[in-house]
Length: 377
Image 1 (cartoon, rainbow, N blue to C red):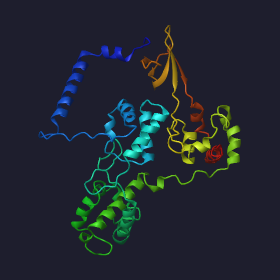
Image 2: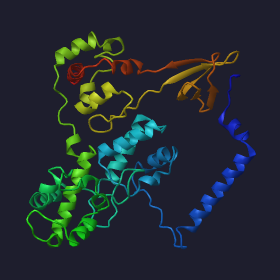
Image 3: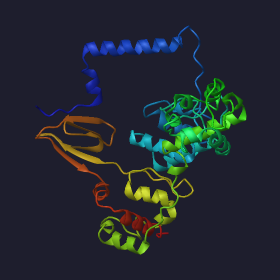
Image 4: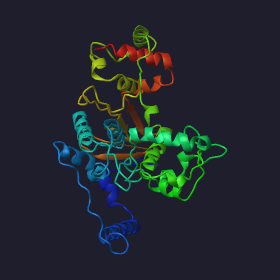
């Protein structure tokens, strides 16, 4: 097979007629459905807009130019850590911006779209692209009150963590709980009658008690998904800093590329310990420094592709596997080739050494190294 080189515009121009017709028809159908609104002719609800703020234009430009409109986040509500996770997902999918701009985006989202405590039927904050938009937001104080109700009436059959047992269902996987919002479906279920530990009618559990119980059960659900307090970092500074320094300069080989007085100067002051460990192990991770604005973005993987008898093309990796390779050059042009024995592909991954070390690290070497890096202030 001959080497294949084409640009995006060329590929579009050579699209088969039948495929073009189908594409146009699908686009027309989608536009028609959007215009008509839901079945029955009811008007579509007005699109949510982003709150005003000094970084709003940056959010619209960066998020809206990747794969969706920026307004997809309107109505959501997360903590700063969760918004950072969302931004990391954007970067992994190709979002283009400077480190400071990504910092501005997280600042804007955390300030204007914080977690929201809802009431039954109110809009909530499911993660983008996953789950309902009215997801139940746990109130820790209410969950603690709900724990008392659970211990008194439910724990014998359903277990301490709500995972069920011989005489009770797994409430973490229960559709009644999963569909519940602030006691709405749990309360309706209890009103129908259900055995309780105390022997009193389950229908007598109502009002604030049901809402508190709902908060507790949703807390057990989020804990199971590792999004609750059990997944929060408590302390990662458990290693020996002196041993970490020896590993840095010895077996780890870190000093071959890094210097405590050069690129790592002040790194212990820049990052919190948990983020410092994350950046050490997975340097492609987008992370904020102390005070949020000291953000850093990963370096790109570069490719140099040379077809047989053709000119070499250099750019940022877009895709690479056993069958094809693609990149974008400095001007933003997209190139793609079918991989053949005559096609020369050179990959320059700035984090290749870190990837190789993942198979060599021990728990001790990780903790010792992080303890040492934390001293570089």
